[in-house]
Image (cartoon, rainbow, N blue to C red):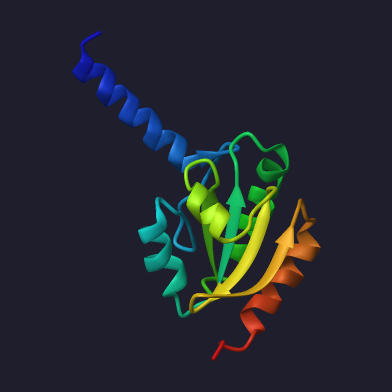
Length: 141
């Protein structure tokens, strides 16, 4: 196989890996995967809407279980809150900046400020309550 073909195939596999985790799409109108620190600053820190930041790893089984639950609750909220997925293996600087020592970790951020933190696998009811509190939280000053 030529180097060019191999490179193209590798790129396509990376795109597919980026879009799928646990058999589900990561990208939707209300959820997106963070690519780097600049992307995080533009899409999360500057957002006027509350953003749930999901620090995860592809090798983490609790993360794989949490993903469909979290995405489902986010979609139920019809755009009132956004979901940013941060792969800690691809974004180690962000994981360190936000003191992520274990995954999954969920943060509620609004206008660049962390309002709440939730660590570990959560059931759907707890996620609903967590996300509803994020929506109702006052805008930080």
